[in-house]
Image (cartoon, rainbow, N blue to C red; front, side, top):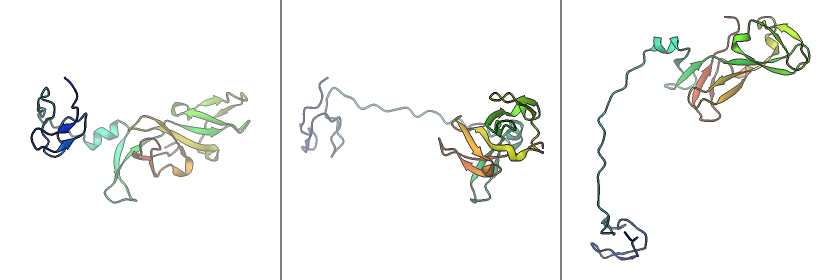
Length: 165
């Protein structure tokens, strides 16, 4: 099967440049070795609707955005926080399961209890995994409990961070 060498279309007679498959004027096949085929459209299969209580059980929910009418954003809780060590003031990444535990700084070895009610001012930021693209997002503490947008995929989400609730 040779490529179209260029020349006049066999159906309409208009000149067509080389390496085309169909005529740009009449859409006729330029290469007699090629045949028109059709794609079968698959049957429509409706997906199961997810109930709002199922979303809440999974730790996520869809809420209406107060800022934009009609925009729904995904409500998610942070995976952990960035916390400034009381010993050396370096920022530590603390996973959520250790928020009510005794922890130790891996830089200065200072041990302390993670009590966010008393030391909330030491929280620098939170982090979440984007539910759309699965990339990790750092969110400053001022942007928590607000609608935010993923920097990787521009997915809308609402981070919900309320310590010790």
